Length: 495
Image (cartoon, rainbow, N blue to C red; front, side):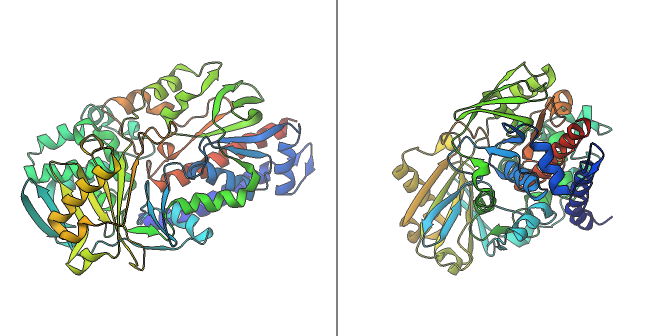
């Protein structure tokens, strides 16, 4: 089966399921109701009890809220701890309508859920700029390479990873036939057994680190294979620019998706409203204790990173499996991104694509993040937080000097500099991407998605495919809304 055609049918299947759920809720006490009337009836038995409370105003939570609203369920509220929506997506406002993304930003082939969402919200996309030479730095040594020259070239190690990924389902990798053996290994250990060269090792260290937030030596092979499985069992699609998951950007930046959804939801969204305690998740009505008072609901969608759930007190305590999963889930990959703004993307004139990777310094990878019309030049970068000064001026000058080694003196004179260290911004972003260690999934993976009482778990980490991506977040929001509507329908049928 063509994976893209299978992907494209997913949103259609979700819409059919949504209609089925509404239909199942349409007969209450033997009276046939419209879908909208049924959804409203389910949420209005008690005026002070919501049908659904959603925790988290990122792509997952907002997608779930939007689906509930579109299904005719008006009895819900979304609670966001920050003073903004967007979660792990965030736009730096550079002025004159130009933005640069500080968090997640790219999408690519097969990520149909977020492409569909963008079309529905009338958010345009445009291709990432990657034409020209990429430069690798190691001390004083410099190596230049056209980005298309090696992409797609035969590589036995990548071929082996792709083949292994075919046997590791992304939705339940712990169910793979050889899951136990694979989960004992780190990606680094597996690579060492392949006898790769130092150049290949550097390439894997960079690509795996950027995708998962941790070096291959700390990453479970089983987890990495499940991510490759999501991308049509092709590592080049997962890690690549041309034809890969980094191929496309959003006009107006990725946070615009969340902003538009929140605007349409209006007063259903409460900002600066962290949930501190959840009481009675095992009862018909759940109490959420927030900084803005107590909210009562019949179902709760927790659209949060698993480790972030530890900041909520649960009464009664969660079952041990789910509690242990949250407590042990890795949260040590917050990532740090910087932005240099220039009057124009001058590197393009010199035949460079803006991608610079450093083997032994603070720069992991820079890239051209300029707007679609190239009206200003933007170099964004992933940096090694511990190796770059936290003083803004020092950080700017340090990176400018590295850029100047490749791009010339113009790189020393940015007009703006921005620095987003996700580990220091707020307590609500513990990590940006998944960095699962060996042995974790086999022991705890089974507790990730099953609801616990009235609690429905969402967030990109719970997605059946494209977990840890923006697309995965959207998919998890769709799934959570369906689960909530089904639960409400069952409750209504008993009343």
